[in-house]
Length: 219
Image (cartoon, rainbow, N blue to C red):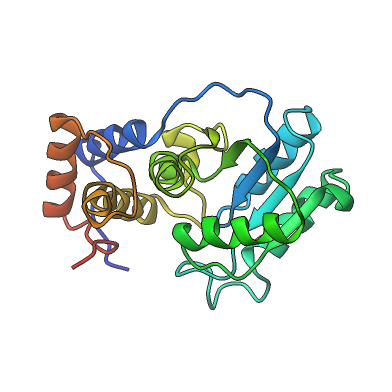
């Protein structure tokens, strides 16, 4: 990973992207909690918390090994996340696991197949994802599952407190930049529904790319 100076200006630009990536949905009761795997285990903790608070009667964990976890973990994201939820008190009987998907499109496709196989037909979902992937998850789900009611949420952590030793701030900024580019490009490719990007957010994106935060861009 290239090392960049994360100056005060850089952090202000990054926070603009962080805020845009949040969709700020209010939690409502749903048929199912759908958890998207990633390298951030706090996503599993957030999902378990929602289940234990009674927001939905079932949890689906979706995720094989993706570009950030392959070579890092020996267990799939879904299996690892399910283990965390069980430790937190979620009963095994209320958990379904989809552990083959490697991207958000596959998360949806393989989850649809899993639900069909189990003869389950939920109309509403609480989707749990990393904070800076809320909007992309929303846009992808709305494209593939337009008729379902969708609430997107993530671990309730501020930008300032989010980075850890395992997930350094620089990596977070690189991923956020890459995800913003995908929000713009993927709507044209038919992978997501269109999301308006305010001009100041796009300007922040361009400045971060110029500053060298380009590791997750699609070339």
